[in-house]
Image (cartoon, rainbow, N blue to C red; front, top):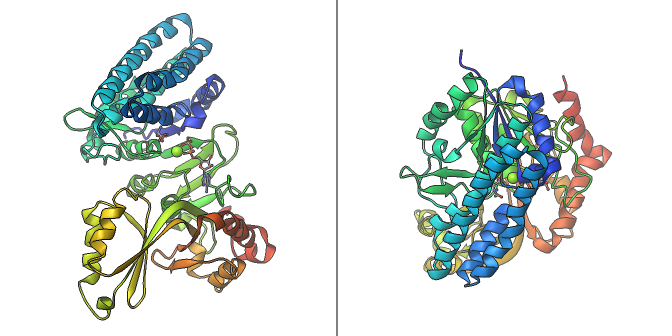
Length: 470
Ligand code: ADP
Ligand code: ASP
Ligand code: MG
């Protein structure tokens, strides 16, 4: 029987400084007997800083660009100084110096030829995860664990969509080839999340927040017993804690519920994380690296998650809605196909869609192609654009059969302008749009109605504990 490892992914905030990394080492040590495979993000803030440096270089501010990264290189040096012995510290110095030299060189090229170059950008940004994984492997070894750095680009093979690459099927075999022998010999592989490479070996990245996705892909490849996402909050909460400080941990979620929450803005999970786990039926656990004893959230198959409860409210701000109105829609066929073809042609993903007799409203997140989309859509009808909108999504299996839930939700926010209401497409979410400026109040009130007020709670989260804990 092949060993089923445990994937342990640590996000940026779990590896912000020496104290956080020492904490991570302690968490991995406790899990030593569970055959851990560690996936780690770049140190907190480093990915943003690397992306900013690319922007600066492109704007001709080369010196500024390289200088802005110094504090991050120093942070790596400081952590190595605090947590590594002299020998390990010296060995970490060489990849660090090499990364610094390469990044400088690449920024120079960008400054000399200031065009947008997604491959160069990925090459630079990947150093965040390459360094954190080498540093963490060294720290784990320093603490007596048999950890081994593995270059994730050897395992995760992707297409050439730089900045948002899609893993290719050979990632499964590659990951097994590189990782299984280590696991079988009792070693702990440590890989950077977020990064991969094309068949030709060119570095790619999987999109912002993509380390969760890396953990899930590697977990699926190795048929892991569990994929653990270690972050800075105690699991998936009933709302974004930055908006609702009273948000509570959801003990158990179904894959479908978690996927909807992630898709509609719960940043704690990258939206693509759940799919590989579903395919192999691997449980995903979200836990807090700053409070490892907290139970966190388990994400499992439908049958084990609490049915008939409302689990959480997700939201995504800065959304643009596009409304196309045309009498030609009436009774016509082929109209919707023509309309969606415009978005396909401009490679822009649509999140929410609602239709009436003569109009269609859609929401998009990425507005890079908006001017060209509008001009193509104007051939089909009148186009109206609204910016600064927020998608709010109430998620939970309980929406299927909690009578009157929509009434309760909308009466709580009846004084706000709500549009594009969509319910039932997945049967576990109720989605609508409000203005960005109203989002905070809308979410706060909904949270109160769904999770804090007694009457509604009886139909939502209170059921949870009763049903889940059996
Ligand atoms: P990491 O660096 O560990 O990947 P992220 O910043 O990507 O961490 O995700 C964790 C953050 O997600 C939390 O600190 C929290 O602010 C935010 N968040 C948004 N919605 C939710 C939610 N429903 N539950 C938990 N966290 C959420
Ligand atoms: N470091 C990458 C980011 O900040 C990937 C991740 O943290 O998941 O987007
Ligand atoms: Mg994240």
